[in-house]
Each structure stands twice: as C-alpha cells, then as structure tokens.
Image (tube, rainbow, N blue to C red):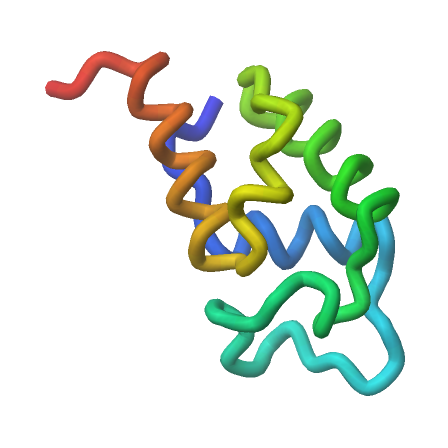
Length: 89
C-alpha cells in the first residue's frame, strides 16, 4: 500500500471511474481548478472517493469532497488522512 497520494493517482482514478469531460485536459494545470469546472459532479466524486478508499485502505469523511473542491486541496486532505495511519520514520 502506498503511503503517499499524488495528483497522478487522482487523475488516474478520476479517469478510471468517470472518464474525462470533453474539452478537459487533465494533463494541464488543474491543481486549483474546481472539480465542477473539470466536469466532475457529486456522483463522479463519490465513485472517486470509493476507489481511493479501496486502493489506499482508508476511510474518507463524507464531506472530504465538499470541503476540498480542487485537486490540490483533495490530494492534501487524503495525504493528511494517510499520515495519521502510517507512522512517520
């Protein structure tokens, strides 16, 4: 199990779970772009959250996506959750 969640992990999981909205380039500078602007509505984000939980073996709060509306904020929140579970060397 990885102890670090990256923007590349997020992009991969978003694409696997919900695909990409036409005209949205996930390879561009999306770190501070709201998920709605990227074409990801609440249902797609719920699926993304489920995939993250399964892959990384964590439980995310129900409000993780409403409180973290951009990829940068979400990656930081997930890494914070992971850091609590994995002792730092």
